[in-house]
Length: 205
Image 1 (spheres, rainbow, N blue to C red):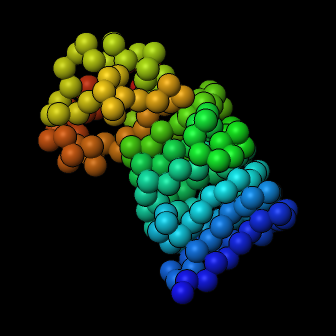
Image 2: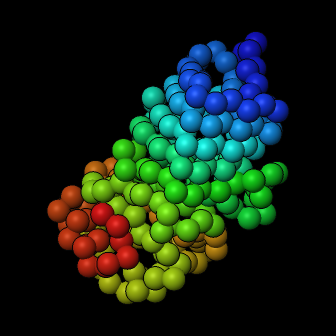
Image 3: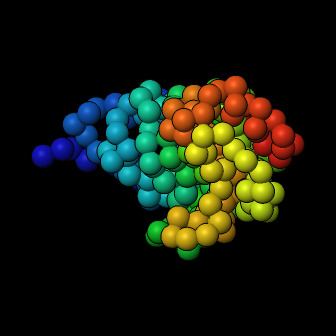
């Protein structure tokens, strides 16, 4: 039976949390506050259970790729993210899951992270430092949705989905892709993708 390691009902400052035991499950919260800490994630997303808490001026390092994690019940302020994130949600996704109201992301730096198929929910993207090319981020994809879909895209890349069961959430304020991975998925080339995203000033690259 896998051991459960709980970080809950406490405040830690200046510490290093190593979430790296492949046989353990790590519970973050409820009621956890980390200040100036380093959090190293070296296990799969199913072994990290974010309940709710605040991370302030922390460094979050995904030592292995963090996949399909929903971090929308955790509040990040002034944090730096490193490593690879695939299909991860950041911010506040209203009405989703228990404790959604505790989620948020503000004044955070993702410039050293690799974000692919990641979403930012219910936050001010003006406070977020994003990774540069070969990552690219569509800001306000719903607001610009019709414009994005009015032009051809290379391969079968679709920048945003506005209809159907897979349509984008109303809380989504940005979508981030890693171009080499998207080129492989869509059958486009890096050059084609770069030329396509350069047409829009609301796509950060």
